[in-house]
Image (cartoon, rainbow, N blue to C red; front, side, top):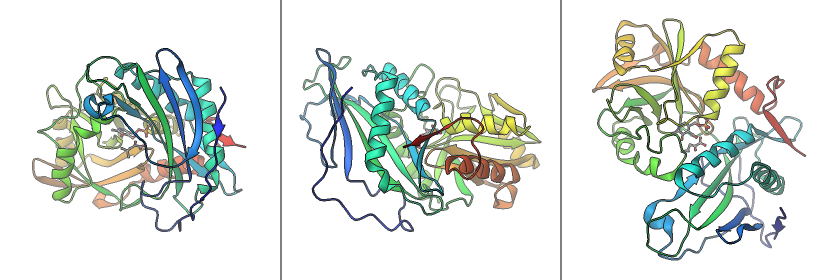
Length: 354
Ligand code: PLP
Ligand code: COI
């Protein structure tokens, strides 16, 4: 696969890394590649960052044919830049593509695209503590017709954004509201795929939660509204009476790469982690009788995010006195230590951009 590179004539000023926030600033270039049934993937190119032009009948605008990924490039102390488990994102993107009837990208091609793009933009990787270069690959269907069918034409794009923490709280505990009216996804639906529609359907509950002072909602399963699923932009883990529990991947939850990594780190450190169905009644009882010792979310953007308060049916429960718990802190330190290259990666997860 050849990638044409067209450099910008007007490079932008790099931002001050103390005021980044999340996803507001974008780098100088973006990657783009087109797909048609006749030609397959073609015209791979890195071009100056800019607007996209779409036909008003384009499939994505009407029927939501869109998938995306999220991963980060981290600046190590020696100045080099590394990715964290990029092959996992590539595989999940292809699974999402399969579910949405979008074209898949061969793994080796996707890896070459990603690393070539990061190499081009690597100077944008900030170095302040907790900052990184967030990479957002996305793909959408763009047939120029209103018929409803699997797409024949698609575009794949990668943009990059230097970021700080996702939540304004940073590593401080966030407040989460358990949602018992709207649902995010059902088994057989698209919950396990990373597609834009899942997030569009989440916004109403998210907005209600924000108005009440919560960062995001914790979803219950879409059939019985009984089992804990995940939070808006992260998977969840709980320490209940010494047991670390995380909802099993039943098909309606995003199989998070951070979730998978947390489970492996915890197990290697000697903790027992159980992936199982966890009912909201069990969680509610644990909150009431004080056996819910810690709760945290995990995701690429959210990293490891302690949950200091959960609200269920308008009753507020404070967890671990609203402070970060011991396991959460240890997990945060280990995972971020590997991601930023501060501690040895004995798992073989990091991928150096040379
Ligand atoms: N669940 C949802 C709904 C998400 O948006 C994310 C973020 O990507 C995650 C979980 C965590 O996934 P990952 O750890 O792969 O970023
Ligand atoms: C990520 O963590 O990469 C995500 O995609 C979450 C996002 C919705 C901000």
